[in-house]
Length: 201
Image 1: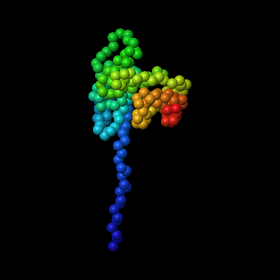
Image 2 (image 1 turned 45 degrees about the vertical axis):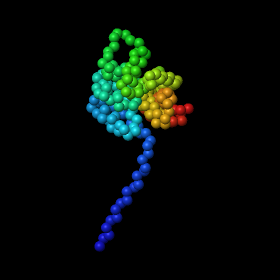
Image 3 (image 1 turned 90 degrees about the vertical axis):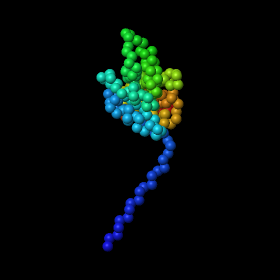
Image 4 (image 1 turned 90 degrees about the horizontal axis):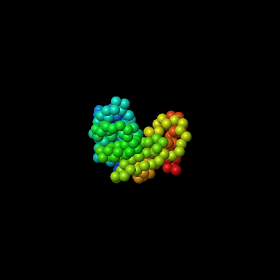
């Protein structure tokens, strides 16, 4: 008579730690009204850090972002996206010629008032944020650009890595700018991404 098969032992599950987790959501802005809010809210209360990079919305609608911003810890637009998103969520337009720098500062403050931390990628001008009632600005570092593809993604990765290590905002932005800059040393989006040591040296 055949012996009954022994039940398989389940592998022991590692003990849960209380380390913060992070979620970086990158999606077309046009999709925001169709689920981004749910994607960002999923995990609220589970010690997750939510970062959102909208990409561009060629249609200029930015639908659903007013709902998403209050549940987004860090918003990661470039300058043009920051200006467009701020106009969309506030309903404000532009009257004639405006000072680009002053308008960007107003936009960043408007986004911060919506409950998120805006960290704006400015390319050769570095990065700009608004936190605790003050602007935080980090300059770019000199670079010989071979290919800028993926620089924004490398910026996002550097900021996320620095924040998860507990670095303050200004230092985290400096790491992010360095990551974005160094990623332009070679063609493609990943070939020249820096190591942590390179990004913090």
